Length: 415
Image (cartoon, rainbow, N blue to C red; front, side, top):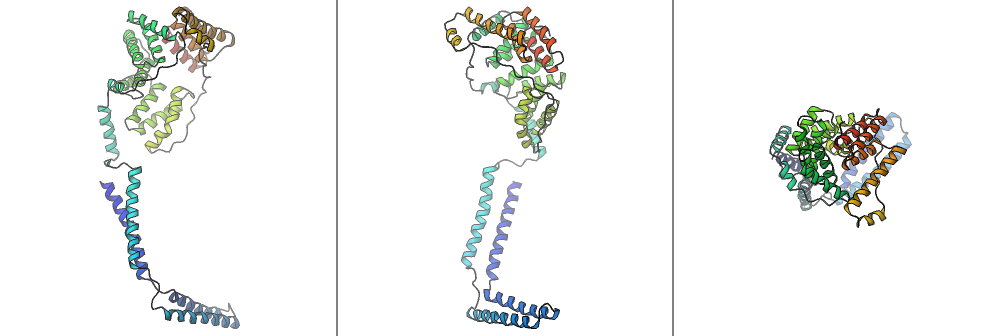
């Protein structure tokens, strides 16, 4: 209410000032000839002063006096014909004042209704923080958020992959205490966009592993829950992020989602600080760094902070190409394949990737992809050998080793 009172007084003051100027001009109106006479008389006085100072000679002074005197006579004759000047019409002046006031006040209100937040209560900093805390305590739980997420379109799958995941589901269901199977199921349900099933499998994995867990396990579960809720960070996901950051304060994905949470809680100031620190720790090109760079400018605007771009340290590795897939003819033929034939085709794709990495080398994400694929196919010994070779190739690259370790863990290998 204070804001409305303030802008009303400002608008009325501006309208009153404008009206005063218009009405005063009306009351002070005078004939143009009267103004001309004052100017000409001042010119005559200035001529005498210039002559005394020696600026002009007598002949020039006389010539100027004659010209000015002629103009004075003409102005006086014109003044005699006009009893007054040409004043502004009173009715028109008052109408102009009313219209100007209406335009100023109405325009102000219309502009605020467009750009402002009509009906929004006055909120100082303390009130906004209190409102944020209240929302944090009462915001929707995970299940409620999931219920509001619209159905997602089915992803384009390589032939045989859906059958392979279906087999994995069956195996994991028959062996509910198999940590490796639950970890693989979580990974591949996520690949299919089944995030609810993915985080449920991840929960089973955490339950089975009990206390033998890494910080990233909690962070991965939080990420899957956030994806299942359409990007919303629920209280349950927040607890997992807290667990992750308590064990590993520099965990990049958890820091990204924690900043996202603070933005959703209307605390962009906290989100901005967390994201700035995360950008400074890098590494450049990491998925969470890309996510922060895409949103931090808007978060800074919401926080009222002038943002200067920050260049994260480190260089991103080459992006991994997709697993070698079938060509158009293979896709057409796959529609008529049996489940065994499609699985054999997948093995062929894995074999081609393995051969290429053995002969030509590749990036860390490609090696991680191969390890994961071998884990899905159940070739644990081969996956272990590939993991050992990859660690040798990327022994000096901390980021690459982290990617390989994550892939090995998901494949059920000992890091």
